[in-house]
Image (cartoon, rainbow, N blue to C red; front, side, top):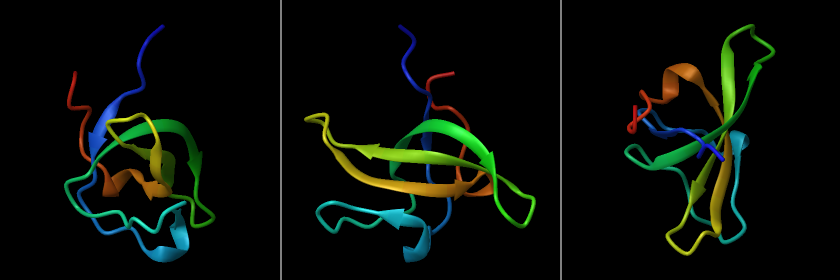
Length: 75
């Protein structure tokens, strides 16, 4: 089974676009997993991303514009 791509956040994600079970906030430089892509209401491409801790638990889930994430770090 192929692992999801890992990408860095290169921009701030506003609070209205992320949820966190324990209050962790996204920050520039976090390495996140990509999930599904979608189009934001403004017509710009986006994707669902997850910050996964070393123990496998999700730290946060965010809706990110493609312009807010960098290239796949494992490619």
